[in-house]
Length: 264
Image (cartoon, rainbow, N blue to C red; front, side, top):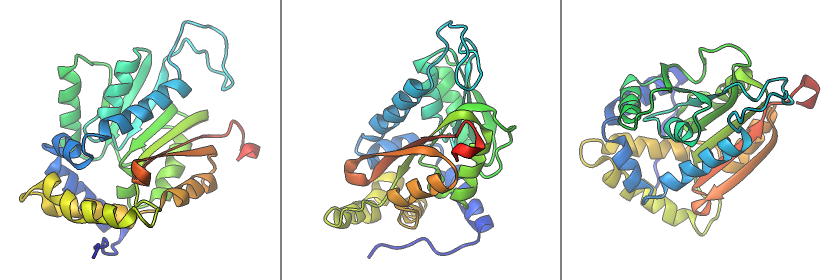
C-alpha cells in the first residue's frame, strides 16, 4: 500500500526538504536519469523550448513590447528551486541574451549547479540562495519564472505562486514542470508500484532510500494536475495551460501575469 507523507507544519516540512536535498545533492543527477527511465531530460527540454519560444531573447529590435520594454534588453529569467541547475543551464545554452538567475535554498545543490555550468563554459548565470516562499527579489523583476520538480516540496505552494506572480513583470510567464499521480485509474496502480517500491531503490540505493521514499510521498500528497491549474488561476495567472507527459505522471503548467489588475 502506498505510504503518504505524514502531516507536518510548514516549518517542519521546510526543514525536512532542506535535509533531503542536502543529503542527495551529489548523486541527484544520476538518480534522476535512472528514476525517469531517461525521460526527464526530454521533459526539461520541453520547458526550455516553451520558455524560449514565449520569452524570446534579444534580436536587436528597438521597438517597445506590450510591457513597455525594449526587446534589445536582456530578458531576465528566474529558475526557482533550480536544484542542480539543468533548466538554468539549458536556457543559457539556448540564447546568450538571457540574464539568468538560478535560485535554491540548498547550498549543496547550488554548488553542484555552479560546477556543471563552469564545466560547460557558462559564466553568465547568477546562482543565488533563496527561499521560494520569500523570493529575495523586488516586484516585477523578471520576464519569466520557471520551477521544475520543486513546487510540491514547498511548504505552501500557493504562497510560492503568489511570490512568483509578484516578481514577474506584467505579461511575464510562469512555467511549472512537476510530477503528479496519474489521474487515469488504469495507470495509477502501475505508477504506484514503480514509484512507491522500485524508484526509491534505484534512485537512492541503500544509503538514500528513505530520502527518495519521502520524495515520492510528497508527490502522492501534492495536488493533482487539474487542481494545480485551478490554483494557478485563483492566484491570478491567466491563460493557464497544461501539457501532460508519461500518461500524466509529469505535466508542464504555463500561464502569464496580467498586464493590469482588471485582467486578473
